[in-house]
Image (cartoon, rainbow, N blue to C red; front, side):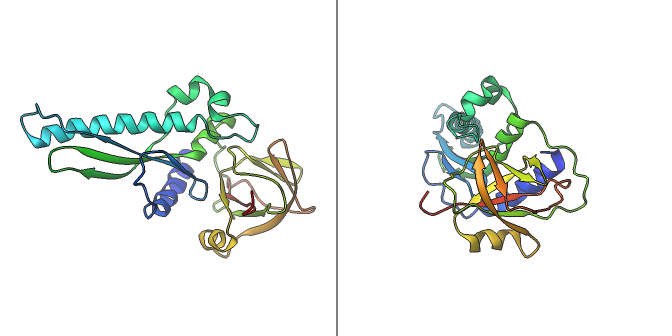
Length: 225
């Protein structure tokens, strides 16, 4: 994803996730928001001369721990290829800049710190298929794909076939159509998926959409999946 588009999508995802519960330290994946969220804590160093200095060190340690939690959890996320992100990306996942997003910082009166951070799942897609080409269109109309009749589950790197070509853009997964449409608004290309094969959703015959603006794809999948 291009830097500008990545920032725009990132801003949307941050706004969406601020109300989500992050009480658990175990990383949680949210396919609707496109985020992997984790919380980590660090106690105050009682040897620090002041609470403020203790807090600075604790926050640094908490961020490091949270980053490690997110990278480890990301490695087990499923790719559209059938592999895990760890198996597909290898050392790239360990060393690459993945744009972690700080969501919340709680500071204890003793200098201890708890941080909540998120890893944008779409970043794993761009690490796998490469960065998106610069958008040619000023605006991109989102594509809402109804795949509820197919046996699919959320994965990273899903493509959609548009006019004979496979488009690999940013993708979110929703179970509830009302919630998906509330996110996308009225300007949307809605289409049914007729099949899924090798990580590509094949859409209804004759479907046309301009993908030059790198549109967001929202996939509806069944509650039973």
